[in-house]
Image (cartoon, rainbow, N blue to C red; front, side):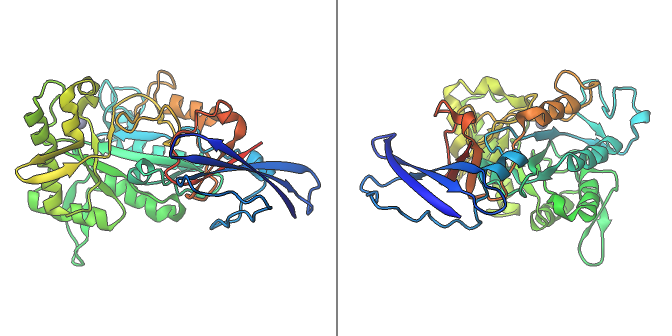
Length: 384
Ligand SMILES: [Zn+2]
């Protein structure tokens, strides 16, 4: 393989240079077609000098593939990611509810265990693999080449982790129809699914005996799950004073910090979505504050929403209003699970290049030069 490297400077910000290296790779083996791969890497030093002679491309942890390989696999890391919002999982068959599909209530906030298990199998079959919400917020997406990320969230803690007792070895015995039991079953069946989820809790935690809840929360973080903040009392945040807001957020973080010091995620699922709070000045108390001497920060907040999330790398992604898909059935229309995945699978889904340290996408998707916005220090690879 022969590489021709062209370098040009592009002044983006006063303190930031964007270094654009167009690499034309002449692929001599296997296929004689000429492909072009454009690499962009962000440098933060103003004093960086660019070699006028041909530099060697920086080595990456994994070898870059050819543009043709990326095209064939449809790699696109500027596309969207499904973040599912579940609530309670009830031990029921779909035929036992009077509502559409696996809905347990009229609005489909709660789901049957049969439907939940089928959801997980279906997402796997469609080529989705799970990842942690916390990694997504950090712009660290570690999903196998050619597969798409999937993120699960559960709000309110009810019927998600139902404890029936404890085994002699200290592991919990779960009601086999609650969310965690089904997740564990699927984890055993599909080792490459990377089963994980984030549970957003209020002061009642999972509503088992408090001692059991505290113990199981430790078990959860030891076993690849995450715990986030859904506020202390689950009230509408928009009408609260700054001090009340600080209490709702800080008191919940304080409880989590007592149970699992430093091991919860600093992410809040806003109760009722609470978008009305976003425009108010006291909203800053969601992101930083001190309650009874305990200081906290929040790095992202989730809405209820209706649809897929933007990639964390693009312009319209807003970490304070991360969108989620309501996990409900509605005959494949109006943003139910089927509708959302139909849209994702029709050219909207993020397809990973398998390397969390690179952001790979077709150059045409960032033709404006402004769609790719935040790189989190990752290496950028455009292909044509
Ligand atoms: Zn809630």
